[in-house]
Length: 519
Ligand code: ADP
Image (cartoon, rainbow, N blue to C red; front, side, top):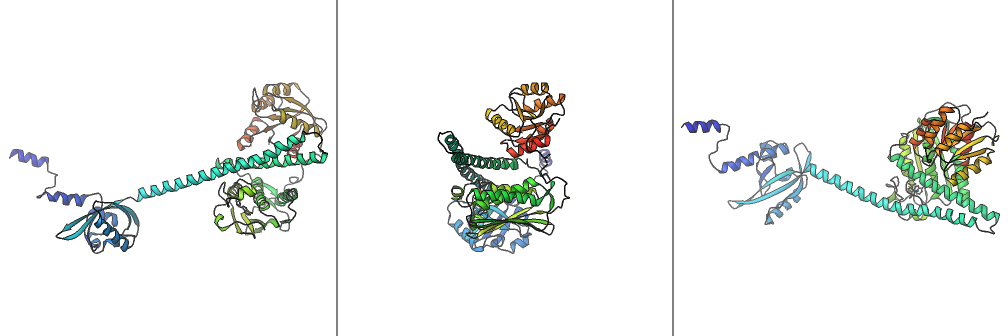
């Protein structure tokens, strides 16, 4: 007796059952997996609590409907599945989707078991909600597809890049060799030199595109708003593209610039705006043989609406979705025929987005393409003297002395030739240490062109050291890197300005003119 009492108190919270089969009833009732028992006419005979929770019905409600009412799919499909299950020897799970009472749907793995009860077939199914797993699988699948697509684009890009780089390099290499040959006429010399120049500038565009894309990826491009004359930007693009048309012998194209009445000073990022138009015009020129290329803008509802329209080959329907994607060139053969990297529109789109704008296009094959983009119109006040050449009236100089810190022989040679052409004297150093020594001992210097990467103390350290003793000496940094951070680093070290290689003659002249120390 005593022991029974102690047993009772020990198992007091146990559920009492009378028959062993009641254990199985409890298992059905308390199972965490929803279970439905139904007959072959799809009448629901019984469900457990987990099923009621999952489907959101009360017991009475669910008993009043049929199994296929719980399905998102059609009744036929479910009946077919049931029939299939009936034919199977073993238990097989299938995946299907269900609809809850509130209309929401979920995906489930369904495991049915069949019985004959008094010669009537009945089925019980376990329903395991696998929606999250399915979503994860879909995400993984999408990511895999994207990775494969990126891989394909990258491979196509590399093949194309190799072609793109080799072609202009081939011209540079070939024609510079030819320049050295005896007996070439002056006119041939000029022609070879101009081919070398244009091939090099093509290479430069290519490298700039690649750098821009990496900068965009690294989030390094920041909007720099200034006030500038919109018309002079568009006019300068017009003259660049007009000369390009002539140099490419595209005489059958009429280039038109469409400007509204008066000049507009606007506040925006001039570099980005140029970059967008430059890319769109470049494409218009590339994909058009005859007819016209027209570009310009209009002010509508506080927006600047830009357009670049051409009468070129057009963009086929099946390429329209993808042309803004990186490395995407629309038709497969287009890269081979017209060249390009598939980066121009991706860059243009990113720049438009940086300016909080929108870009789109309309195109018809063999009729032409019109690109449009709009950005907010912010009117600026005219800036006195900002637009015109900021010169002191002199093209050349007065024999002032420039220190060129440059370790590369060819780069120095180029600078030496340019500077002497501007009527400047040049003294050279090739290490950071020597530069400091020369700068501090030579009181005749009017400016330093400082290469940033130099042996024995880099250009930034040398700049800081020199400025400690000669704070007024203007130092312009010159570097082969073109990342935004570099410019800031140079300015922080005390340089008055910054120029990136390859150095363009007019750009260098402008910078020297602006900064040179006149005694
Ligand atoms: P790229 O010009 O270097 O190939 P882009 O990103 O600038 O790369 O352009 C992507 C593709 O869009 C081009 O290869 C071309 O198929 C199509 N495209 C762009 N602009 C035009 C245009 N004005 N006319 C016809 N097709 C164009």
